[in-house]
Amino acid sequence: MELKLVEQLLEKYFQGETTIAEEKQLKAYFSSNDVAPHLARYHALFGYFETQKVKQFEQKLPLQHRKQRTVKWIGIVASFVVLFGLASFYFYSYEPKYEDLGTYNSPEDAFAATQKALLMVSEQVNIGMESVVYLEEYEKTKKTIFKSKK
Amino acid sequence: MNQNEFIQLITPFKDKLFRLAKRMLVSKEEAEDATQEVLVRLWNKNSSLEQYNSLEALAITMTKNYCLDQLKSKRASNLQIVHNNYQDRQASVETQIEHQNTLQWIEKLVNNLPEQQRLIVQLREIEEYEFSKIAQVLEMNETAVRVALSRARKTLREQIEKVHNYGTQVS
Image 1 (tube, chains in turn blue, cyan):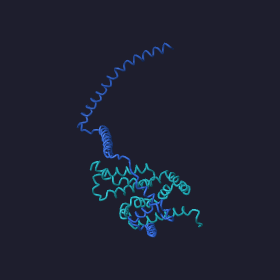
Image 2 (cartoon, chains in turn cyan, brown; image 1 turned 90 degrees about the horizontal axis):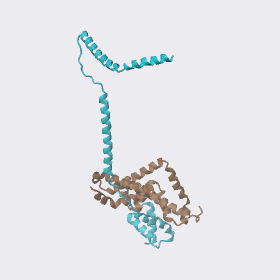
Image 3 (cartoon, chains in turn cyan, yellow; image 1 turned 120 degrees about the vertical axis):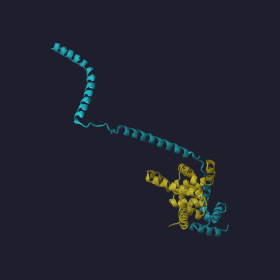
Image 4 (cartoon, chains in turn green, orange; image 1 turned 180 degrees about the vertical axis):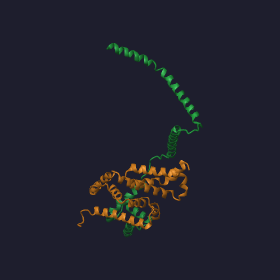
């Protein structure tokens, strides 16, 4: 290539006006052995661009990612379902039940029914108390011991 | 689309994605991560891929956005220090020339350009994209691409001249 042409192309190149074809010409010129001495300093620039074309991506691609992601989501969703299940179970089981148990019309009946219910409760309590009667024995013995000590 | 079809689709341009990511993020490992991430995202889009007329353009745009995000979050975190260290090493440009590492030196010049210029330099000088395509993938207009490219090339020229004329000119 003529030196004059190279210089022209180079000027255009720095203005950003060269086409791909012209840039290829320049690169070819600078990779040849007879570069004019006053242009030799650009040799490295074009040489560098040429060396950069060969770099390759050699990593393997983990394309199964997509599957793993759904598995992960299933886990998250499942744990939420369990969490909500438990939460709603506790929530509803503690809620007091407002059932209609019926009512008495006359105060006498109501009084009798209440008395009956309380009686039942106290009977149950007395059953429990019977087993505590032993304690009385213990109490007695304790008293005698402490008295004798005195 | 199954895996094999997908891999066939991305093979023509996956190296370009990597090189672009490498240009932006500098570190090889980070560039690999970025490329992987972008390709996996593409794979996850799988079913909607047919609606794009150029998969390559889409992938380049995604890589660009991903890298810019990475750089932004890097700047926000303490990695700033790393970046400073990196720049500090540039100071001894002359020493590097003495060591004949001209290509490395050029690489540092290129990597010191502003992000957008770096993207454009990569796509134009190395991948040899037409201006219209660069404009498309970078979501800019063509004139802006030309201007930025010209600016980047002139910056490179200035720096090369500065070193070339070092000690020969009294300014």
